[in-house]
Structures are given as C-alpha cells and as structure tokens.
Amino acid sequence: IEPSPRALKCLRKNTNGYDNIQIIPCGVWNQSEDLELRFGVSPADDSLIEPDDGGNGELKTVQVHSIDEIATMEGLDEIDYVKIEAEGVELEALQGIREVDVKKIAVSGNEERFGESSYNESAEILRKRNYMVEIDDDHPYKMVYAHKNENTNN
Image (cartoon, rainbow, N blue to C red; front, side):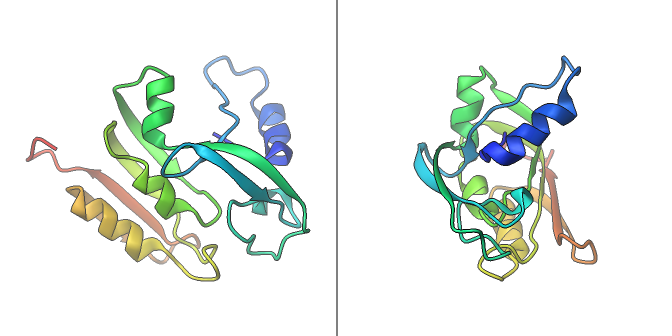
C-alpha cells in the first residue's frame, strides 16, 4: 500500500517481475476520505502529516482507507501480518483496524510524528485489543511487535 506517486514509481520498479505482489495505490488512515499528501524533500518522507524533513511544499490529494476497508475491498476476512511504517500516521493506521482479524503486527514508532515517537501509544492501542506486545526501543525505528493472544477468543 503506497500513497506517494513518487515512491509508487520506485515500488513498481523494485517489484517488477514478482507475480505474488499486489500494489494498492492509496494511503492508510482510520477511515476512507481524500487527504493531502505532503511531499518531503525525499520521496521516502512523503507524508499525510508534515514531513519530518520539512517537505518541499508540494501537495497532492490522495485517497486513504482504513485497513478494515482495504481488507473488505480485497475480500480478506483475516490478515496474517501487517507492517506499518507510515511516515508519522501509524496511530491512525492502527485505529483503522477494527473488524478484520490481524494475527501479527509490526509498527514503526520513530520520531516522524511531529518530531515525537509514537511507539508507546501504538503499544497501548494493541494491548487494549488483547495483543501480546514487545517493544524494541533499541531498534532505530523503535519497533512495536504484537501478536494475538491465543488464550482468548479475540
């Protein structure tokens, strides 16, 4: 899933020839709507919030959807693994997982959210949803790893 037309170009080039990869050109958020994508100085920093590199001033309207809505569009009742590295909007992406059964999740929590880390908030959202959570705050991206607690029906 990639909302940035600049990064999408690179993604398509890097995945050319793989028939087991489907690219979905949209952003991830907590609901469906059109939002402004702010271009970073580097395409890797394009974001739905202020880019952490200050940005280059360019904007582009993009469609965003929740992970639940994307799963529905793709006909998925469950997802084995979701990795979220969303240039500062990881919390909104997590908020968009309400109905689809996601077994394992990895979330970046580096300082891309208005210069602040969000890994503690991500971990709390996941714990409240009965995930077993590990935080790797030694990782450069302050990763949160979570998996469903098998001892419950959630």
